[in-house]
Image 1: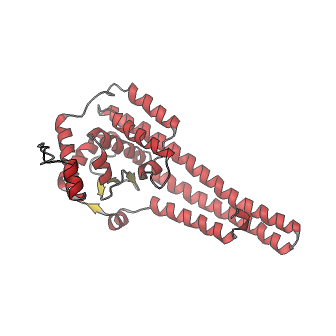
Image 2 (image 1 turned 90 degrees about the vertical axis):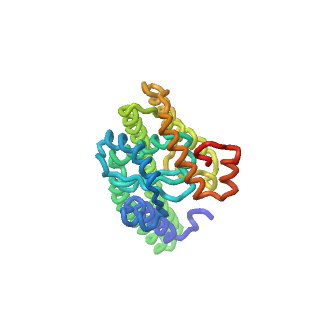
Image 3 (image 1 turned 90 degrees about the horizontal axis):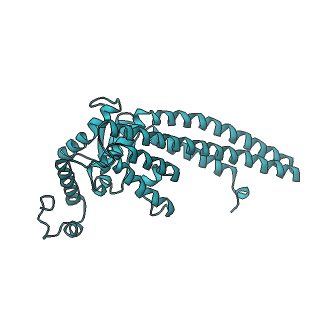
Length: 294
């Protein structure tokens, strides 16, 4: 089906649904998040995440206790912010991250979004673009109605032009939003790495995360991880990130053994509670006598 055969109402409805969805996510309140997301509470895991995030948040100027890390019971690797007071971390991120530094890198990146006021800027941009989109639709619909009223071949040309105005306006708006999103992601990378350097930590965990998901940009959306979709990784962005990580004096610094042990214990707990027993025993066979396995 070509665009010329699609009713005007379809494009208007599609645009309205798009903006409603983005605004709904961007304007997610703390209470709404707590009610609609499958959050889990665990004192031991929360204490560990607080230890991971505290120096990062302080360096980012977010204070102590202002921002909370909330755990979402979801096996997909993902983390996100919707306001300036919460970072939502999927259990899938904690279970898949092989080291504390990977999780800390994700937290540093999300802290960059909060410190940069990216969600507020995005909401303001969407509100402004929504007005522009509606104006484009009005102009396009007016032209199409005028073309239909004329009832001539010239009228059909006017109608087609009207659809072009409506669809072209929407396309330009989406391109603008995409460009701003890429800019915010790059800014969050650089801010996050500055927090890691200021706290004497390596950025390799962040780099490994985005290298992993850069590979997913070449597979279909059906099998693509949420983190890869919500944090697009352009080749130039990844190259810049790699250069910044390698130039850090702490690039080769390892996680303290005690912190790594706590990380392994956390992963074992999550696997034990969330995964099917057969998967758990395959991951931690009886021959494994380590404390996490026990």
